[in-house]
Amino acid sequence: MAEMASFNGFDGEHVTQVLRDNPDLWEGMVFGRFQYSPLITLRDISDGHINADTMYIIAKEGKEKELEILALKQFGADEVDYDDWASKQLGQFLVRKKVLRAWWD
Image (cartoon, rainbow, N blue to C red; front, side, top):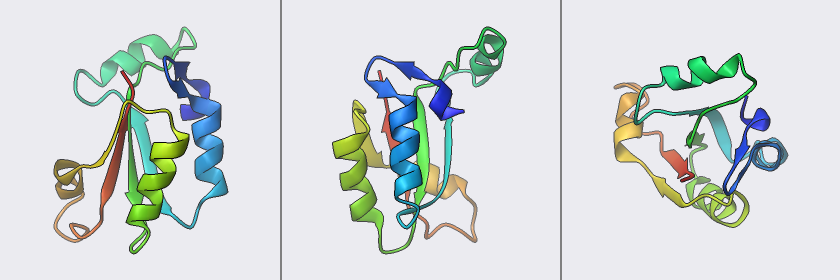
């Protein structure tokens, strides 16, 4: 889905390719509009638009810094950071996982 989106500094094809080229750095990714109604994405998808501004990526253990540097250099995001709230949302069994948040304005 992310490869279908492009806006402001976000180039969906590029970000998707960067992630595909670096599978050793991450375990999973979601892309959407999480702060406000996530259903905005559903509203616009039939028009061929992906209305999203945030990507969450689970870093592989020991690769957190490498993933952060890659995102800072390659994603063109307005903000890149590790999100404690997102990590806690994974549940008690995965709480040690670090979740990188990339956000585009």
